[in-house]
Length: 289
Image (tube, rainbow, N blue to C red; front, side, top):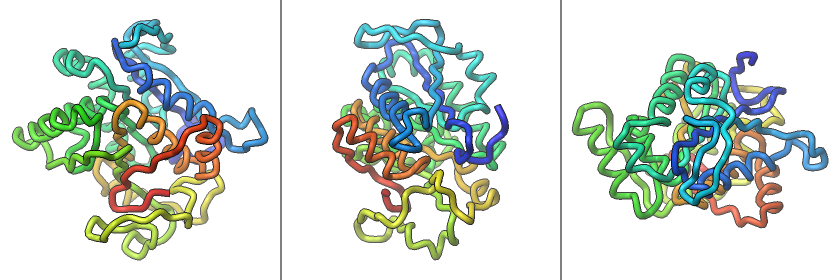
């Protein structure tokens, strides 16, 4: 695959979904439905935006609900091809066993973050769904960021994040309850950050919706792009980190992903086809689309 500096290109946006043993089926199925439905042109069914690849330890993976999903590449192949992917999605389910065994996708998460830090010229996104955020916390990815998870696992997430601080491996994580999803490393390709009207600080009171933009990486293009130097100066080399809340929240987070990598019109179109009411999440130091 040709090297890309962002997800804005003629070829599809490449998505890798990591499936571990006894993953949660809805965590997986929700985002897949969103991403495989998204189109550049609503009138052209062939204008698919995303190309989804499933990675797992075995050719067939058993979900927590007893449904078997076929994978397309092994963990080894996923590591070898990691640079091909614009988005890595980490699913929840069976988190205690995965953490105890320090099993995949933990190493895959770490490798993907390192890839971005070593090559900030490329735009990449890491999205976790439900208890998938616990894997990100264990890997130290959430250091200095904000995050959420399933409501029943908020305390577990806080404990995992605090251990990173206690062990001197990272900074405090702002764990947010009751958020459908939390977005870190928001970026815009126009104007300077300090003067950008679409970015608000944590100190600003409240949040308001904005219809002024259709996302930071619209396929409709823009005349100015963020500088590589600015991206490199961000945490994790500018890796966009999105953590979704419990189970169905992954649908909302995936719709957000469509809105920023394509446009809001496409995301709304997907929500309409799915008969889904899109509940917006929290965008750190910014406004949701």
